[in-house]
Figure (cartoon, rainbow, N blue to C red):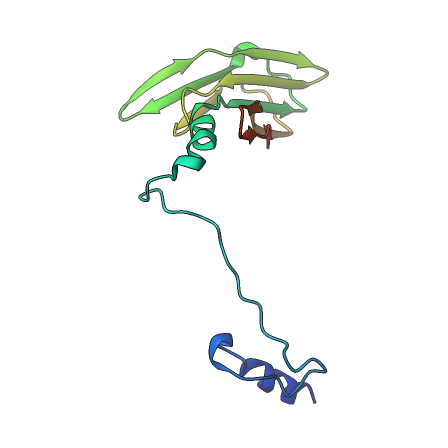
Length: 149
């Protein structure tokens, strides 16, 4: 019986060119079709969407690194941005070391950045977590939600 169902289900592809189902109680049952609202970056943004695009372009991102179960100190953590063949040292916005957890944050220099994190200590590390956050913002017609990833 399952072979019959599988064969009937398979014959429902492509969904655009087949008729009603013969294997279901609801004969209009269709296989899922997926749609996306993603837009090509090559297409100019419509005027009504420009305010939210501008807010997204201007949103400042913060990168947070948490290192767990370790004896390293904040001085052992460094961040650099790699631009071509050069590296630029990035200052830490904050760094805390509490109960074996080091939490360091930096303000990202841009939305498209290659960041290298170096731990210069030979201490053991139990694990790490990277997070990305950005503040919310509103204007007359648009609201940019807070990013917390």
